[in-house]
Structures are given as C-alpha cells and as structure tokens.
Image 1 (cartoon, rainbow, N blue to C red):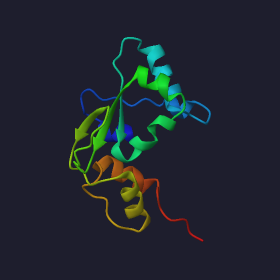
Image 2 (image 1 turned 180 degrees about the vertical axis):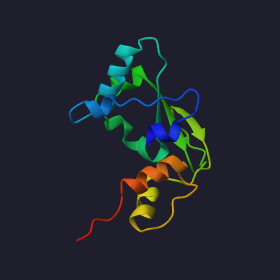
Image 3 (image 1 turned 60 degrees about the horizontal axis):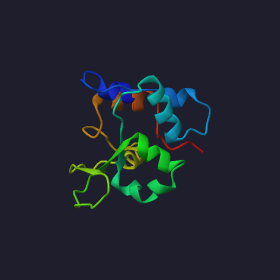
Image 4 (image 1 turned 30 degrees about the horizontal axis):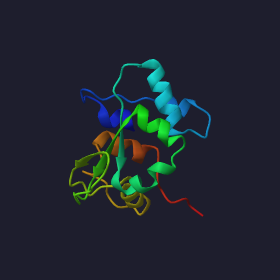
Length: 131
C-alpha cells in the first residue's frame, strides 16, 4: 500500500526490510539496517504526536535518538512544545479511523490515495470477520 501511495512522488521510497526480518521487529533494528546500507544518509523518523509520550520506552531509545532526527506530526496544530522538530498539519485523518471506516462499511474516498483504496477493497482488508 505504501508503494501505491507514493507512486510518482519524487523523494519518497518504500523499504520492506522490516517485513523480511523475523518478529519482533524494533525501530532500532530498522535504523541500523538502513544506516548499514546508507552510512551518510540523514535519517528522519516521523512520529505522531499521540505517540511521543511513549517514545522514551522504545527499545534502545538512547541509541536510536542518536541515529535519527525525530519529527513529530502535530495533526491537530495544537502548538506542541517538544525537544523534537514539530510539523503542524491540520490533518484529521488517522490509520485507526480509516480501518474503522472500512470495517463498518463507510467510504474512505479522499482519505487515502485511490490506489490504496483499491488495494484495501480488492484484498478485503480491515473488514470485520464473519462469525
């Protein structure tokens, strides 16, 4: 879905290294793997504002924060004060809301790229299981 969502967008790429690793997969493992391939790359880790409070509990967080620059997406434009860069965008869309809409049969048109909507539909993703 990510590949479909970013198709034609310059400067974006999808990396499936986490899918190729046996679970559990931790962010530090992903960063170290990317750093091994791209030792001079400047790495940014985008995180939603709702997840910042638990960030310090991430596996090997002290090492991780030396390897990436965290950027916090403040979708509500609430004026967060963070030790990290904050990106403010008034985006009232969340992955949870998209999954809930699909599960309840509501439209996700205009909330995701058309190609992503088609994948979700054709693969019957996020549908409530029949009992």
